[in-house]
Amino acid sequence: REAGNVDLHGTRVVVFRHESSGDLILSFRGTKTGKQVWTDLMMRKINVCLDDFLAHPHTKDGQTTNASHIEDMLTKGEITKVRLLDLLPKIGEELPIYLKDARKSGHNVSGMGRIHFGFWSSYNRVRRQIHNIVREELLARPGRLLLTGHSLGGCQATLCAYDMSRWVLPTVKRQMISLHAYNRAQLDSLQISCYTFGSPRVGGPSFAYAFKQVVPDAQRVVCDGDVITSGPPVYWGYYHVHHENIIDFTGTIRVEPSLIEKKFSLKKRNNPQSHFKETYLDVVKKSFSPHMSEEDLLRLLKKKYGLKEE
Image 1 (cartoon, rainbow, N blue to C red):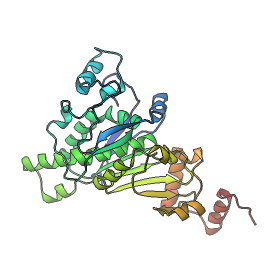
Image 2 (image 1 turned 90 degrees about the vertical axis):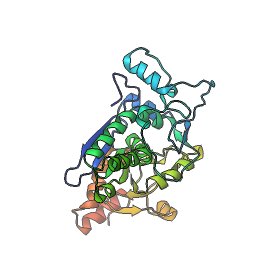
Image 3 (image 1 turned 180 degrees about the horizontal axis):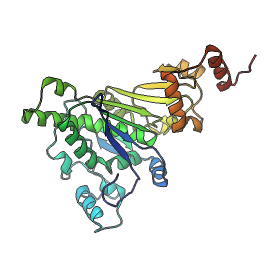
Image 4 (image 1 turned 135 degrees about the horizontal axis):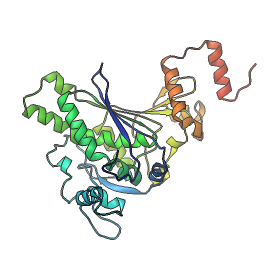
């Protein structure tokens, strides 16, 4: 959760270890509270440097501030009111403490990416804690890092995956080498995956392109008809990150469906019920183990697509 007693966005993330595989998993909670609804509605975009993954320093009134200093004052209760923009680490100011001894990856990414302000601000509220916990856990037990989340949590997981791949994994590898506390298999096990469910679009085309380079193992799972995954709209400059997997109500998975498939064999994305966590759990379970006869499957298809029984 957010640091101290300050809870500006209601961001929540659970960190746990899958014992049999050794995967370290971070799961971000989706929209549940009024603060998180407000976060979803903060749709104006902020410029973020794709190299350092820090916000552009210019504000609307031309003033700049030191985010780390203001964060400490807020956490200690020395101030009670603050602009969300002032809490975001920015290019040109002193690096946040969790980045001072960090090393960036060798990915060739540069320039600015435009990212949904609410998603960016809410992720940064837990960014320091995530850096510290993940670095500690992966040094103690190297393994794959898996980021996941539903709805708003999917957007935060997407930003976290880029951040971890850009900053944390290279730092952990460097520390392991410097301490001579590694073998080749352990180094090779430091991989990253991002699997989201019902995620809206996170940012503009520059971020989507950079994300594809930095996080190649990414999967966006979409329940057929999910209205939330259709926003924010493309005409506002928002684009989805790769790779899309649509699951219908029979558990059938379509990987990166074409425009023709979306037009003629999939539902329009206008169904709020398709976004519920319970709906996602249902269709994902069916995709692994349908447990239905051909007759039941045909009956379900006719019901869901409005066809009459013969």
